[in-house]
Figure 1 (cartoon, rainbow, N blue to C red):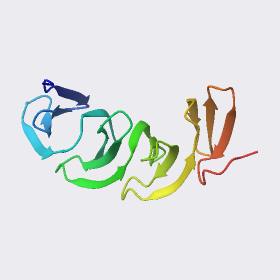
Figure 2: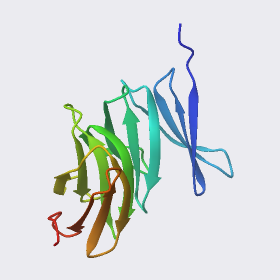
Figure 3: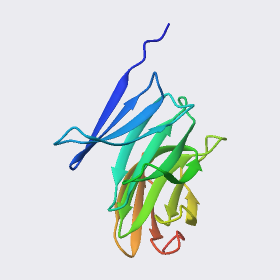
Figure 4: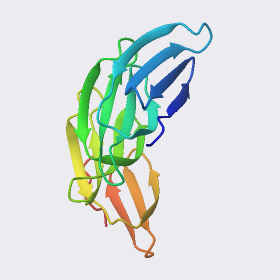
Amino acid sequence: MEQAFSQNFELGSRTLHYDCGKAMLLCKDSTSGKNIWIKKISDIRLIDTVIEDSSRYYIACETDDIKGYYLAVDKETGSTKWFIPGKAYFHIVYNNDLYIIFTDEKNDFYLLKVDCSDGKKIWHRRVRSDLCEYSFSPERIILKFGSGKQETISSLTGIAIQ
C-alpha cells in the first residue's frame, strides 16, 4: 500500500499545504498559523509547482507521469477561477500574462500564452520535447532545443520571427 504524503509551498506570508491522502489543499497564514481556506483537489497524485500573482495561485497538478491539469485559484477564497487540462512542465507570469509549457492528452508539447484573469488562450505554439532553454522579453521569446535548434517567436502572437 502506498503511503500518503503531504507537500508544503511557502509563498510570501502564506503556506499552501497539500495532504495527498485526504486530497485537501489548505492555505495558512505563515506568521499566525491561522487557516485562511481549505479546498478539495481530487484525482491528482501530487502538486508539481505553485506560482502566484497578486490575486491568484497557479497550481500545476499531476495525475500521472504524463497527465495532469492546471488550476488558477483565488488567493483569498480558494475558489477555482479556471483550469486547463494537461500537464504543466513550466509556468511563469511575465508582463501580466501567464506562459505554460505543457503536454496534452496525446503527449504533444505546447507553449501556451494565457490571460491570467479568465484562463483563455491568447495563443499556443507546438514545441519540440527537447526544449531546454527559454528567454522572455516584452517583444520576443527565444526557445533553444537540445538538438541545437533555436526559434525566436513574437510574445504578442506566438508566430516565428525571422
